Image (cartoon, rainbow, N blue to C red; front, top):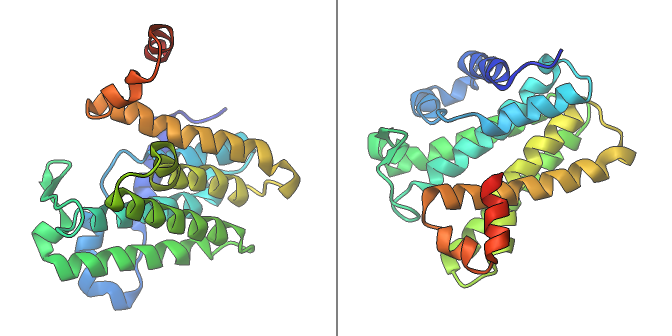
Length: 226
């Protein structure tokens, strides 16, 4: 019987809490652990996909955790003064605010390295390749956001959607999904990432006018009903 999201989230929390970092990263271990808060939406999604494909969650956990580490890396760097200049996240000081900018940069780098190390524990390079592709897309999306004036849908596809695609596909690849069956899962993942960002913008308030202004009243009612 499939586990509910809370049960999957607990598996992720336990895995991350017990995850050993490379010994050379000991000076960064505390800020790395400090960065690993959050709702675990992406790793839970990866586990749910793997479970839907018949895989034991234990098989998918390294891939799911790798996606979460990349997500944390992106937040640590996004919070830096040169980007969003945020001093607080989830009610706590951001990594740079607590430990300094230089340490925050290195913490993000270390999280990315550990994510790749996890992705490379599989017998195929596909999981790591998927994660790298998503990371590059996310970074490219961040640069587009900095520049401004780019197509909003494309921006969301890259900046937010890439890691949702990685969550779905890393979970599927860790579960051994054959290449011939990739297409529908990729299509689902592509829609999910953009939808998540749209809903997040609306709930946030900041994107409400932009998201709703181009839609008719009928479309607005339909979206709110979901």
